[in-house]
Amino acid sequence: MRPIGIFGGTFDPIHYGHLRSAFEVLQALRFEEVRFIPCGDPPHRGATFAAANVRLAMVRAAISGQDGFACDEREIQRDGPSFTIDTLTALRGEYPRRSLGLILGMDAFLGLPQWHRWDEILNVAHIIVAHRPGWKAPDTGPLGEIIAEFGSHCVDDLHDTLHGRIYIHAVTQLEISSTEIRVLIAAGRDARFLMPDAVRDVIKESGIYEKCAIENNA
Image (cartoon, rainbow, N blue to C red):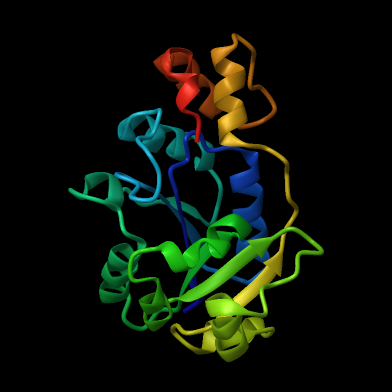
């Protein structure tokens, strides 16, 4: 059985930057699927701008019809903070013989030591770092240490073992920011071509970013 990719985030809103990175990981690493998991109560940032049900609707709209993409709403349904280790542990219980790969962007990976129980993640999943071409991985500090010990350049390692590897993969980096999209919409401009039209429709129907307080951008 091929690995399952786990792609979490607030997705506030989801856009082509998220989707393209996930698609390239899906194909290049030969994953069975990439599962998008919208964060319910993000512990590492302030409140989201769009409510959980709206963000979930945007993710569903964004991936509709794409083979290999799936939406998982467990963090939206869970009470309390959405800690990644809890989600991965639950998935490991559901898929005891399936390789799991947590997909992180470069910024998220660099902030990993601040995550709740971050040092337990490799006990239940691989870490896939989707980064811009030319980026150099840390070679010092806690991240440098785990890359030196657990890093792999072989895709087959992600298939042959259930967890415990760090794989760094260059993806096309589209310079699209959820923050900038929110600012653009609040200014009365159109976010077309930054996201699928189906996501744009959800945003228009909800009016969410027209109402949000831009001074609290994150």
